[in-house]
Image 1 (cartoon, rainbow, N blue to C red):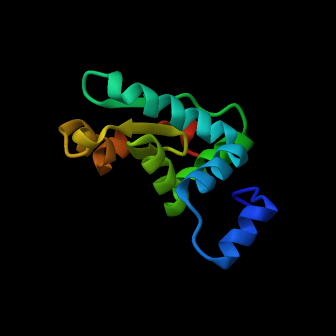
Image 2 (tube, rainbow, N blue to C red; image 1 turned 45 degrees about the horizontal axis):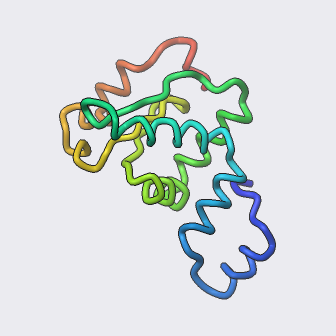
Length: 130
């Protein structure tokens, strides 16, 4: 299961739309490692010279790796995080998370990061089974 949804939030979702703040709070509580990584890069990106920050450290366990995968593979979760932090997230190798400020999304750096070449250059034998 991706998220631990409180009963009251689930009941509201059954009745209709829920707001982003409640959804993002559920993500924060359910996926604390993913939240920490995304929060760190999202906070650092605006202060960087090129509007980019990334996290390349492999997660300490498969549980944390699973959190990153669930957070960034879900359109709803990823979109909620992007709206909350005001960044565009990018993802490689099941653990390399990057945040780009909106003005950097069409930059050479962004296009290189999300390109097939960027993915291939970020491979190594120890990451093959991640």
